[in-house]
Length: 414
Ligand code: NIG
Ligand code: FE
Image (cartoon, rainbow, N blue to C red; front, side, top):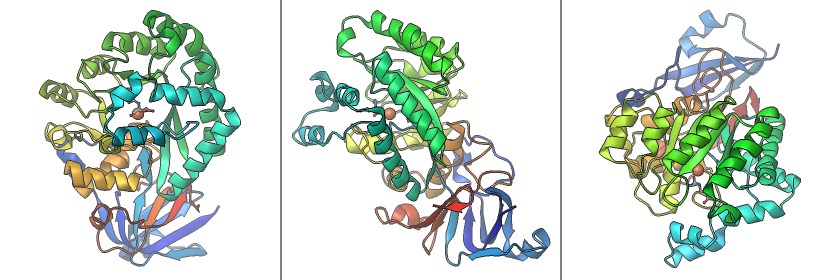
């Protein structure tokens, strides 16, 4: 057995004997232990506590001991919403936007998701894998230890399956925990612009059976939005996915409130993601449901949209997660540290709330809460070691500065 003791940690963050999905006021409660230790055995957290408990809890010290003087240790980020697999970046659209075009106008002229779909068809599976692998490595150094990755730039059976097989290979090769989501319903491809029923039929009858047979996805997603998929279309697609055991995790209320929240809750969705545009009724419905609201503030930031109403959602008692939405169109960064800073600066979330939303609640939004998201006995030793910092609030406060010294995944420094 390989054992390692991390000792003299200035603050061990998000220590939980048991965990449950955090809602409303609970999000502000972030348990910490000052002057702490963590014992790791075979990549799993075996014990933790205050230094004064060390002798009692760990009578026989392991050979490998690491001093973490002045450092904070946190669970790694659980990024529950990304589009990490893509062929090319889209900085030309970024320039169009700087010159005044809207996201919707760019999409309408064949840019946006369709642009990424064209590029994806030209790329080989190896090229897609290598690009995503590089991004995954960069993200792990920034503290991401678990990640959800969507398809959705294929928009044909061939393209969607190519993406999902790339995600499957990432799952097999990476030490990070990865969940895969089928997002065939990201937009209508050009060939089906006037034949929505035809495209939905191909999702249900061509794509889903292969996805299920090859076990290519954990979840099903749909972009429920004006000009994309209606709530009724989303329900049809999700119900078909659910017959294969895929739970819905959905894009709703990014640009418009068109009934996506209500439909998602009816479908018992694991999460509803984006939520830039929420009516009071939407907030109320979400707060009374078991569905997680996943906020993607870097998408609002990059598209210069109003930020998600985090305070209103928390005050209403919603269960909130935070994710990066890493994608080439609306959030070309998967840096969860910046995302957390933005959540505090622009959405007025407290550092404790943001950290909980990006760790334990993010784990729930990927159903990884038994393995990740907190410092708990039996969970994976996926840990962020900060540089020496004065306080936890210093992390979002000093946005843009990389304060991570080292990242450990399954008990190994990467
Ligand atoms: O989550 N809103 C829909 N999908 C992505 C953006 C996709 C793209 O522009 O490539 C999102 O923001
Ligand atoms: Fe997204």
